[in-house]
Image (cartoon, rainbow over all chains, first blue to last red):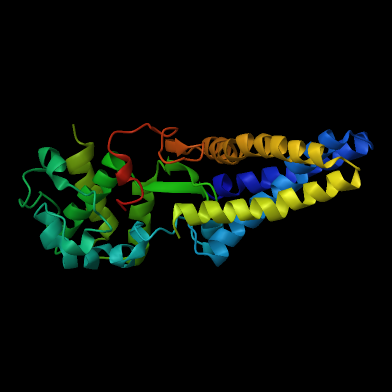
Length: 214
Length: 100
């Protein structure tokens, strides 16, 4: 994501070098060609950096510089999993909100963050909404099952989306990073543990039982 | 900040960072006022058309090289609609950036 986000600005540097080369190659262009080279090399690059930086850093935009300056590895959207308790401790988060999630209904609390989380599709795969999925026999089994469903849903149905955006003109591309579920489990493993077994084992077991099994 | 406000700031930035230096350059090259107006308009078109596609194209090339998967894109600025976008995955565009 970092490589993708900074790519246009690295290209701007190369374009400036191209402009320098052109002006050194031919010292005298016609006024229009000179202005064209000036516009497309130096000024375009300065504009690209300046406008995206100012809109994100000063005016609170959500473009490339918002990500680059955030110091995070994922897009700092308020809808991202890192926004609330989700990353802090998924077990605690799931316990707090599992009644809604396990019941197959989006809670009001999650209506913004997980507005598109519609477990009814997953009910085909995971069982009826409201029915506790078969999971590890631990105190967090329900949470693990719920989180596994959430991982699966977000990763396969409406994937975790990261975004590159040019702030000024609202052009953007959306990425689905392929290893989001794996990263989530790794992150959870670092932050949470269950006595006798880590939550990643629980989640992995649930994942393998419910998703990966044919 | 709305899309219109960002576009307005983008236009203002274009005027300050591109139009003003180009006008100064063309005046220094002793162009007539008529040619300056014409060149400025042509340069605006030549600057604007490739700007966003090049910017997003760089994102695309670098992301593709890094193994990322493109889900959707808007390479051309939307003017009143998102006709230039392409959703490559099932589900509505409204879902992007909302779920998780």
